[in-house]
Amino acid sequence: MNRRRMVITAIAAFTIAIGILRADSPAAKTLKKADLQAMIRNAHTVQQYQALATYFRLRQQAFKQQAHSELQELERRSADVTGPAAKYPRPVDSSRNRYEYFTYEAQQMSQQAAHYESLAATAAQ
Image (cartoon, rainbow, N blue to C red; front, side):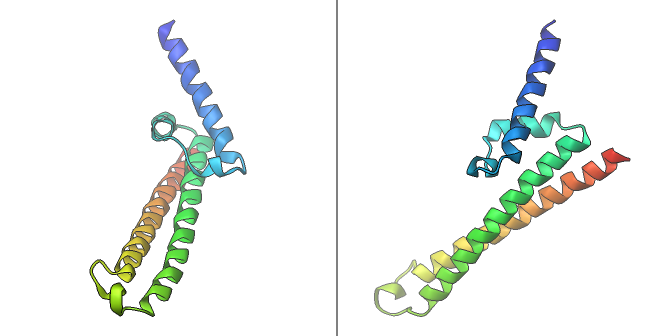
């Protein structure tokens, strides 16, 4: 009886999480870490893998957008590297670090999405 209740709770949580992922609200781009881990742990069907791939693609796009805006800020800051802007840490260095971070995270999200897309393709066969 207890195991059955756990399975029903997990299915309900996963169904709610899928609903959140498919919504067009800003909440669709972020999940709590525990919810995401539960989704990953309980994913066994094509739809579940596709939901995870969609989530990671959304995160990838968000990081790409942040990297693009940070690249513009980097270009703006690199025009002036004299005076107070020449002292370490220079604002241009901070922008470069943030740009590299966002680019790296976008790559990681892309790899995660590709992984779950391949699992969805394998599960569909």
